[in-house]
Structure formats: C-alpha cells, structure tokens
Amino acid sequence: MIRTIILFEIRIVRFIWNIYLKNFNKFKALFPFLNENGGIYVVEDLHTAYWNCCGGTGIVSNGSITDPGTLPGSSINFLKDLVDEVNFVGANTGFGSSKHVTPELRQNMSEYARHIESLHFYNSICFITKKP
Figure: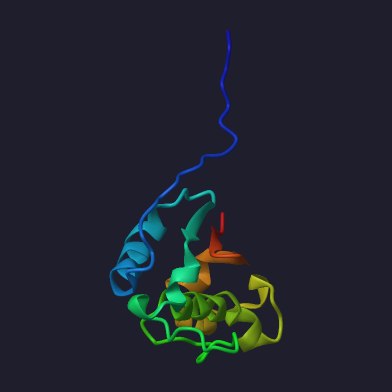
C-alpha cells in the first residue's frame, strides 16, 4: 500500500495589482481562502504603484520619490497599512508575541492583525504569509 502525504499546498493567484482600488477588494475576498494551515499571498509588479496612472505620485528628476507614501488609494499604502496590522500586538503590549494578547485587545484586532504572520518585500514583489 502506498500512502501519499501532502506536506504543503501552493496556490497562485495572479492578477494585475496596479489597477489599485479594485484589487483591495480582491485581496480582502481571497485572503480568507488561503490554506487554513498557513499560506502565502503574492503581490507582484509593485513598481507600477509609483506610476501616476496607477495611484502613485511618480519620481522626480533627482531620483527621489515625490511622496514616499504615494496616494491613499495606492497598493503601496495598502501594504504599508498591513505592516501596521502585523505589528499591532507589539505596538499595544510592548511584546511581539501573541501570548500577551488580552481578551480586550483581541476584540480590537482586525482580521489581518489576527491572521497575517509576516510580509516580505523584495524588488517589485511582496509575500504576505498567513498564520497557521
């Protein structure tokens, strides 16, 4: 008898992230369906978020970004907000571990603060890891 054990599952969701406002809704809709034992959501083509046509403010001639935060509706700002969510426990308790979360604090945690383990940024790509 041969038994197959699946150690992990990979799901790839590909869409054009740079059409900024619509994709927040896609992320919100798809993130809960990542594997309940953890999963990774990949956002690519982040460089396009700095383009004027995609919610960014562009690059000035000296090479610096005119507004590092870009516009409020941009994918970069959305991802920056997720960084705040990942650090919610540490910011409110002084400890990064979830064992320090009180019932009162847990009530104030967003879905993302409860379920995102980490964000990893690289050139034009971000990996959002869901907690197991």
